[in-house]
Amino acid sequence: MSAFQTATVLSVRHWTESLFSFTATRDPGFRFQNGQFAMIGLEVDGRPLMRAYSMASANHEEELEFFSIKVADGPLTSRLQKIKEGDRILVGRKATGTLIAGNLISGRRLLLLSTGTGLAPFASLIKDPDIYDTYETIVLAHGCRHVSELAYGEQLIESLHRHEVFGPLVRDRLLYYPTVTREPFRNRGRITDLIASGQMFADIGGPDLDLETDRVMLCGSPAMLAELQAMLQDRGFVEGNHSTPGHFVVEKAFVER
Ligand code: A2P
Image (cartoon, rainbow, N blue to C red):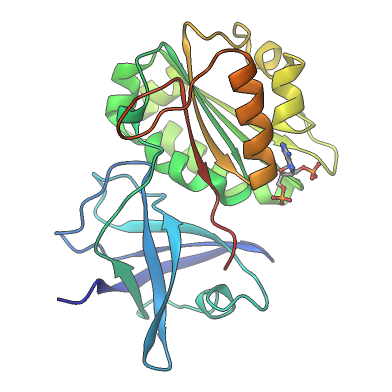
């Protein structure tokens, strides 16, 4: 059996010159935990060209969804950005990744901190009903350079607000905190700075970062992860993994494409 299965592209949406998302058919045998990633790609010159992509869809959904950057000279995304409805893509059979609920010890507030396409695994997690059973409050922070780059996340939150099942949960318990660094917006600045200064917590109307109650998932650029990791460790937070759950977990946003 090949390590990859084929999936059919169902829809493609271009959000900016550098961001797009797409949905594809899901093999009924393809199982994953919300927050995980799989290898996704195209057959190029008779060979699979694959990169890691977080599922942006939840595991109870019928279709797969992915959120991607476009890199003009990227081996995969220079091609993948041209896919259309009906095209075939390759999907690895195995999902993996550390941004899963079971890698965190129990807590009351879950902070999902992302930059750029690091939003993708959190798009999956905020559609997981179990997350709302486990945590009283979920904060989804998404940092981008420009307002236009927030569109995918804004639309996701709007559609969850309207959702029959998730609407009430999301409206009550999910605090969405988009922030922009390079042009005017209601929230401005890097997530690191907004946390260090306490501004983010003041803006969402919640208590400051607290080791007793807060659990954190990080997904973004290596620099963002390194800074937040250091900030959390300074405050006593311990990183979790599959063998030992902790106060926070980390995955880099996959951008080498
Ligand atoms: P900035 O505009 O100040 O560089 P990128 O597109 O480069 O991945 O950046 C996405 C967002 O992450 C931008 O808003 C960027 O801010 C921010 N960012 C970059 N480096 C860091 C960091 N070390 N910590 C937190 N946010 C960062």
